[in-house]
Image (cartoon, rainbow, N blue to C red; front, top):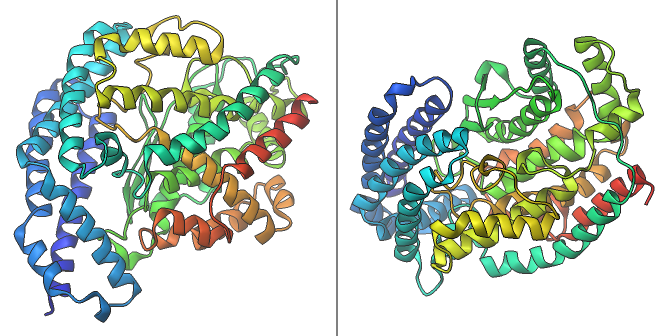
Length: 490
């Protein structure tokens, strides 16, 4: 056995344990009894302690030192790149801090859920302040000459800095604001109205998941307050949610999470439980969920097919196919990021990006966060937040300590805009196929161009290789202006 063989065997065991930790998180969101919360916190902390000890095991450093990357193939060198980065980062974070974070965020999630249900930010603020303090400490431990926020961001989008994102977001904002205002000055299309049976929504959810290529023999769909995808390889689970007045919420939450899940299911089996056996970054991951949900799922062609399936499932919708397409893409004032239309979605993300940078930098105290959120929201969207669950309490991320995660949502949208350009060239009759509900060519191209590679390439390399050019915000903006310009007669 070589040092590389020993290291990879060790890494696969660590990867398997990490999957178990993920399954505990899935269970907490879906099936765990309410009274099990404190026990689960201890379980998560104990398992995180084991994982942290493995990630910082001195033998990893010894194996890395004994391996000559020049003797490895492309995949081997990529494995070493990821392992070295992970080892160096984990070694900078004290084990006690890692365990404290796991314990605290499990508790914070429960408090957030209760505070959100009660519309009571004050009930959540104290534990959020604890989370911010620990994440700031983690960021400072990880930062080497950079900022704590950049160090946290690197967990989700390696190689990207807040300055990089601020430049991109600065280019996005003016055209998004102008497009939003032009649309809201036009008459709004009719919404879909009625009451929609939950069982029928879940049947449609299953059909959509399978249509977009989700392998149900290696996955399952459950309900959760905040839809998410969990796992990789042969066990990739998704959740969705239902609303009796809004079947689009269920349908598009499902398509979105299938984008994430399809990515994980498509990664080369030989990479399983290794650093290459998962999506390379959250931005690239989000590019898959967003192109599935929006550029494919909300296209005029696919909406014609979906209109037929929903009519079969729910009866007369009161809208013809064209009006249905307009309803799917209706732009309107909305408090909730996850329910926002394509035009305004990124403005929600930019708000969070700025606020969480201020929290980690110490420029904003948690006690002042609700006021800061409400002021920024009113400035960006032109109306006031009515209650905390529609404002500062709407997202789960900060309770989970996921600082640096939010900007990857917009980065994913940018990547998706680039991928759509390349997809249209690769599949010239894309619209005709979507009109038949046939996603095989589209998802097949994404599987080959992006998903199968897992962590083999860097995030920017993945998109550049797939598209033939480096990623830029221009294709996304052009797509949005063309699509919504036609819809609203601009």
